[in-house]
Amino acid sequence: MVLDLSRPLSWRSAIDTVEMLDNLQAGILAPHARSHLRVLFVTFADAPSARTFLAALAEEELVKSERVHLAEREAYEAAQVPGSPQVTVGLTHAGYRLLTPWPAPDDPLFAMGVREGIDAHAMVVVADTVEAPVLARLARVRALLPETATVGPLESAGPRDVPDGLRTHPDGGGALAELLVPEPGAAADDNRFGSYVVYRRLGRPGGSDVLALAVGATVEDPPLPPGWTVRAGAYVFLPSLPFLRSL
Image (cartoon, rainbow, N blue to C red):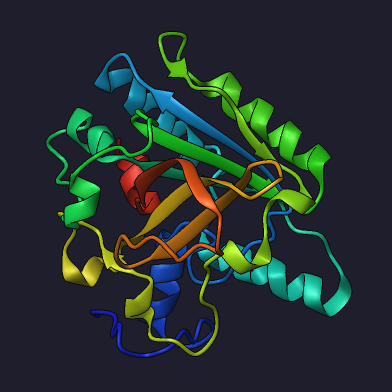
């Protein structure tokens, strides 16, 4: 059954929605707490090592599904049961070119490639409300990295460095089409979707840099407060879990 993207999220009922949520990376439809954030930008030496790493992130369940995340969030709201850290993996346009023959998403800005000096094939984000689980999960991610990969400087943020006003993350009541992009190359009834992320390291007047991630169905830079500047950034696409496992 083909998912109707014009409707809002109803995650406990429709079978096609459940299938989509099982395929979708966590944190796209429902925001995940990311008071503590670590961001890795990875450049691979070759396609086989890239495929091995990306598939392992999904197979070892470091990247969780949106349905698991929604269930964890519900448990926390009901009884303060803590969830697991979120690991998000995104590919740049160069990453898709490396993984040919898989087609890349076709947003024109995404296809233009890198911006503000970040040049990589993949972005891996590890986030949670507490720092210790983030560091433990980050260590597991690093252990899977191929020896031939090049990892850029680690981007990190604490609770004061991820401003609420710049965490563009629509939640509740909006149409799924505002956030979801059908996965290139997948059949419509596979219910495999992803989403674009605009990653930016922002300079604020008289203060330290902060990190911001904006999720959406198109590549669009959210507006900045007066005096703020973009110091570094990247456009990435968050592929589905079946895509990662298939590599």
